Image (tube, rainbow, N blue to C red; front, side):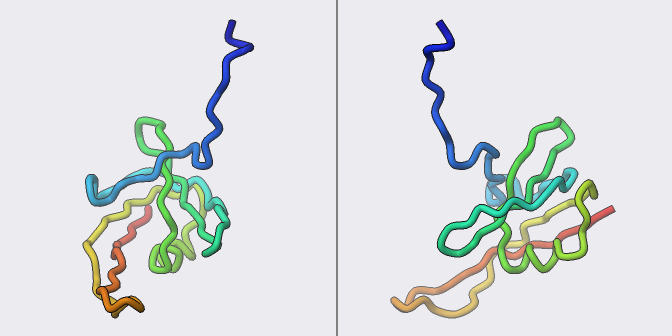
Length: 104
């Protein structure tokens, strides 16, 4: 009886794109979702050619690059690696992921 079945509630129902496994993402930019939390994070929701939707964490750089891109625009996000931007409080290197964004 399916009406008695439990369904897991997930905090993120859109999978997060892994740029280290697949450095290029092409699709239609649908919207920006506010996730909230300690850092007031956002995610960009991208619909790929196969119809599957994926989320991309809106880093400071990506938020700037997406600033003038309207929803329903085709985008290509290319992961270009990591850049050292200083040190953490514990002395370890602090790195950020870097990207190039294209639209048409």
